[in-house]
Amino acid sequence: MAANDGTLFATRSHPKINETAMTANASGELYQDTFVLELRRSLLKSDQAAFDIYGGFIWGENDQRFVINYDGFDFNQVDVQNTTTVK
Image (cartoon, rainbow, N blue to C red; front, side, top):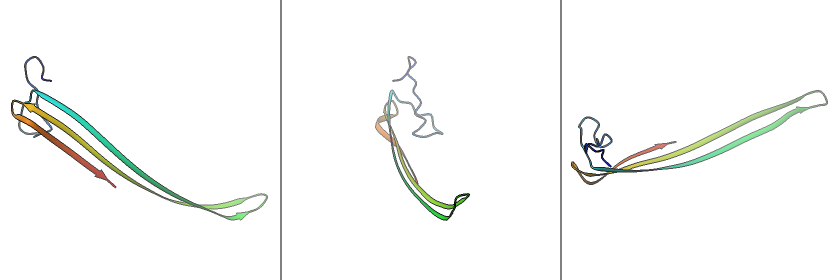
């Protein structure tokens, strides 16, 4: 909700223009998938020493969504969405 003076700047709608709103409701989502593969092989093993070789692969995906709903003054039920995907 806007403060007592009635000014709520909607900076996510347009960063260079000072648009104002009466209310702003925000929500966010984050989805994360991770895949890990690890390989190990013993090459030499004795009573005094051991030699192992390791290798691995890690893959991750992140999907993020951020939504703000502005209403009032310069807006009429406007949704501003920011979506980011990282692979």
